[in-house]
Image (cartoon, rainbow, N blue to C red; front, top):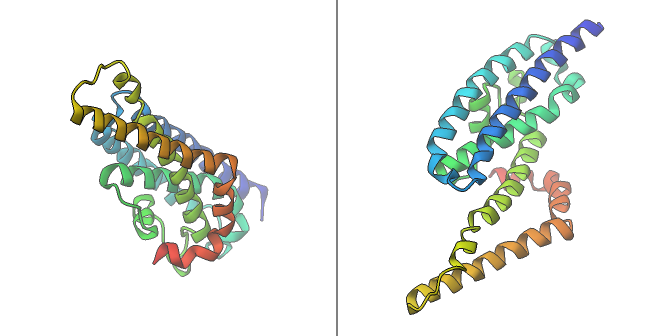
Length: 203
């Protein structure tokens, strides 16, 4: 295949990478103090960005022979995984549910079925979902930073004191989960086991 073909693919991929960065920057706002209040607006803007992503992916399909998907897969594998994560993050923020592979392909404007052309490889879907898990762990920790504000209060009310104690306990549990994932490398084990768990996760 001519080098010009690879160059054309790279150009589209670079545009997709820039779009992914823009969506990520937008969604990262939920980690800020008032981020939760703007979730609907952020998700709406992210959906608008995904409209442009669809256009670029439609262009990418035309840059190589339809039956040579896996020959060029490495060019777009990483950015596609990132887009899966971002789509999954938007859906979770909107509905608090885990996005299906089929729903992701609708957001991205590509196929779920390999036989139908440019599709979302199951490995890329699972990689994106695993990234979402890490992001939600971070969000959980950031969401309880209000705990620092509670420390300033003199809680004499018994029911408020109990609720505050529950908050501290939940923060501790979350921190333990994050510790296990980062120190013991459980997230890497999950990634390596993903292949054997494909059907379980999807169905």
